[in-house]
Length: 422
Image: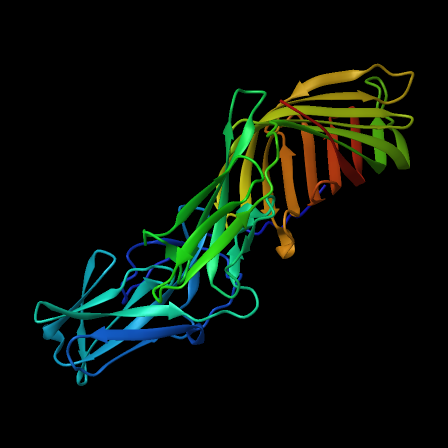
């Protein structure tokens, strides 16, 4: 039987600049808040009277990830200083930047963080003559970039309306195994506001329960605000989750006696199917998973498996996860009441693709995968596509066959969460 699968694969978005200074590779985050050069003011503070101008290059603003979870915007700035290029150099992010001659101006381009409090220092003939800074304007509409890593925690901020800021979340497990509780870490940064001690961002807020974090922040104008960050934090973090699925399946079986040349066949256009799922979380990237799929009518077919799942890649801003599935399965087949039970272990290996927050719907997942048998003597395929959040829809196809028999089931089922343990 021929079948075709389409999986969206790609390379992680790694940005490099051949002609401009970008200070190494970065991980590009999803552009969930659209920014343009009109959202920022550029100001010079010089001790000498020289002609100078700076612009943020069009279409150069992009969100990048820092510390894996926090998105911050950066842009390419172009600086023009009237004079000879050999007179000037700049200092930013612990880098000394040289200039080129462009007409009457010393000129260069490089990336700057739009959330950084660091200024671009300007030197002329080795002497610091001032700096240039970029300031964000008040942002109408959505001004807070709350990363998808916070999607299960209902993170909210009060007191920073119309001020650009971003937040990212990471949950740590604390406590004894079987009684673990969450420790929610929220990294956050703002374009214009800092803590009162003017320490560098990002800042870390830690939640052990749902009590909010309150703090005071200030900007360069001396304005002081009191802000509040709140989040939902579950009381427990459980490692073992279970679910059940059921639905109508098409069920087709064949059987041939060793002494016969004729093959018997049973077709059930609508047969009941029952699925059980289990997932034991080991680490952030690994788990032990189990399943059982059963369908019955005149014939009975049951497929159970246990396997080690390991996430080997996260691409497209960590939304697409590729997982290897290594383990074993047990197959049970009875053609009818007059025939003997066929029961044997097999060792198919699999691959799964999971697309998180599908179609920009928070916490909804589209996943698809397959198991195939490496043994030529066993014809086995198990293919599935799932869509959902807590409950999910699953389209599944399973085929197992040898020379004397075959069993095929396919259909649509709905999955519902059961109990969680540990």
